[in-house]
Amino acid sequence: MHAYLLELASLMAVFSFAIVSPGADTAMVMRQAMVHGRREAILTSFGIGTSLMFHVTYTILGLGLIISKSLLLFSIIKWAGAAYLIYMGVMALRAGKTDLDSVADGAEPARQSALRAFGLGFLANALNPKPVLFFLSIFSALVAASTPGTVKFGYGLVMATCLIAWFVGVSFFMTTPRMRSAFSRASKWINRASGMVFIAFGLKLAATKAS
Image 1 (cartoon, rainbow, N blue to C red):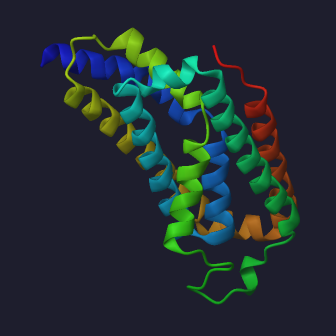
Image 2 (image 1 turned 90 degrees about the vertical axis):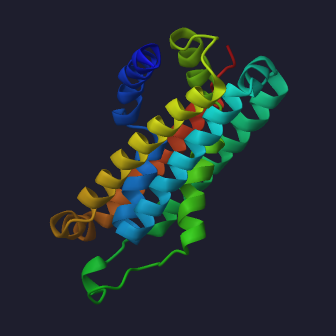
């Protein structure tokens, strides 16, 4: 048990930097919070966390190694993910101004279904081959081959929980009255900036090469 705790601590020491590093997932949650509201941002956060477990599961099963070594599979996932992020970027650029001040208390503009909000987070993370390489590398380097699969799955569950908690915190912060008021005043430019960020991440993903 002590060895497993050391492995988990090592994994979390590396993963904590990945959590707080700005990326497409962070941009997705921030935009969800400011455009659609706290509920949608939290659901998107859970979608991202669930997608992380998806990556961890197939890494444990050995499929991650197959994907990382198959240029065709890697390319399919890469181009699908790049297209998705660029699409989200174009939609953000076309969104224009979002006037939250004109919305009645308790109402939200452009209300999303729970499935759509969850799916946005899940797909943004699932259609990205970079986590394949990330989890494959850290599990190979920090987790012993003799560690049972159930324990490895537990590691992933802890990591996913921490990731969800981080993005839920971002969701709450970005939906405070002060932040929403600031967004309402600058929403046109924020939508444009977030759109460019999504497109930039999509182009960066398209340029990613399998190692």
